Image (cartoon, rainbow, N blue to C red):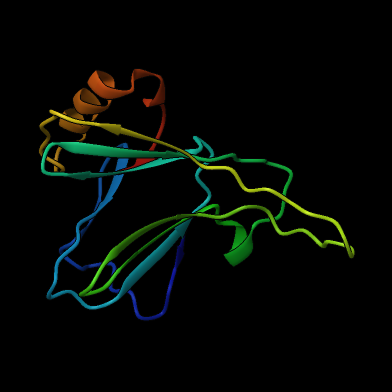
Length: 137
């Protein structure tokens, strides 16, 4: 995990659970940013009954930016960002690279984001193939 210098790990919006890390958006909040090597290859955002799931690749042998992060969470008074990152590569003239994200929306869900068990239940109802290890929501 990488923590940006302006981030307060004691910020009330940030929660480190047994299986999940959660970050809430708050219009009064100061900037906060953390980066992770998310080998499960997904992150999610939950708001008012809707779960947005973003899937992205994790290549263990690859070199990722920001000391190995393929997922970064950022929030300030205006927004919350769930950003996936691809590996660092050097491209020659004419070469291209692709970074793929698969998105999924699941409606009609309920969850207390302060409870890993409730997060598990919501994820299992919405997208059961994702629950494994420590994940971000």
